[in-house]
Image 1: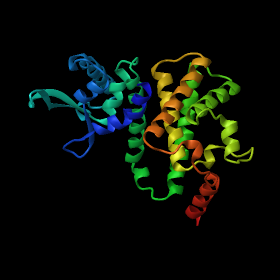
Image 2: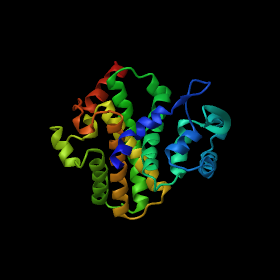
Image 3: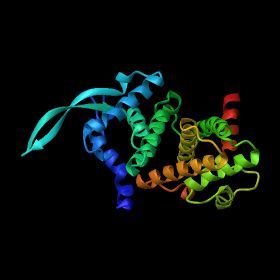
Image 4: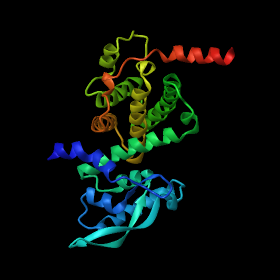
Amino acid sequence: MKNEINKVAPVTFETIRRINKNGQDCWSARDLSKIFGYSEYRHFLPVIAKAKEACTNSKLRVEDHFEDILDMVDIGSGAQRETPSVALSRYACYLIVQNADPSKEIVALGQTYFAVQTRKQEILEQKAYAQLRTEDEKRLFLRNEMREHNKKLADAAKNAGVIEPVDYAIFQNHGYQGLYGGLGMKEIHAGKGLKKSQQILDHMGSTELAANLFRATQTEDKLRRENIQGKAKANQTHFEVGKKVRQTIRELGGTMPEELPVAESIKRIENKAKKQIAG
């Protein structure tokens, strides 16, 4: 049964996805409450309230992400009636799963699913990214994003107790092992046929870079949100986040990161871009 849940969870979230009057993706709070296993919708209301509070604390308008609606609910014998519900944006769903019962495995899967989808949408909605057309342009954009978020991840890890360079290398290795099915940096480096001086991230295509960007951003968020302390706990957190991102890729039918092709050095592409600007 456990494996069956893992297999169908993201499909379920996609299956209940709706389109609101503005043409945007949304989810019904009643639908989510059923998937998360709440026996009655009223038990789910405190979770929604906490999510709204988190939205307010993020300086965002609650009305933009939580819209009161009426859902048609079966009452037996083929009859239905209108019942109050809430239309949730993707970001609202992300806040919902952060405040739902973490002991439920489906909630943990939902945390990864909506975290990945939310981050993906954030990237797609950025004007700079939306204008990109070629693989090289996307790689340059995502590689720069990765540099910036690795700095933030390093800061979050430092706050958790990962201080020394050797400890941070171990911390990073745990993230790769989670995302790459147990393969660490040395194994990934060797698998790509890279020289000792070449960096793994510099030879990733846009799809692989995006997966690693999700890993970095979600690990940073989890370290800070849960105020995780201690090197061992930080390492385990990075591993678990990487593993969940990998699981989401599998369930969405994507290619595992270690199976993606090796890309041309990003440094060559950066040099080409500089010459075009200069010339």
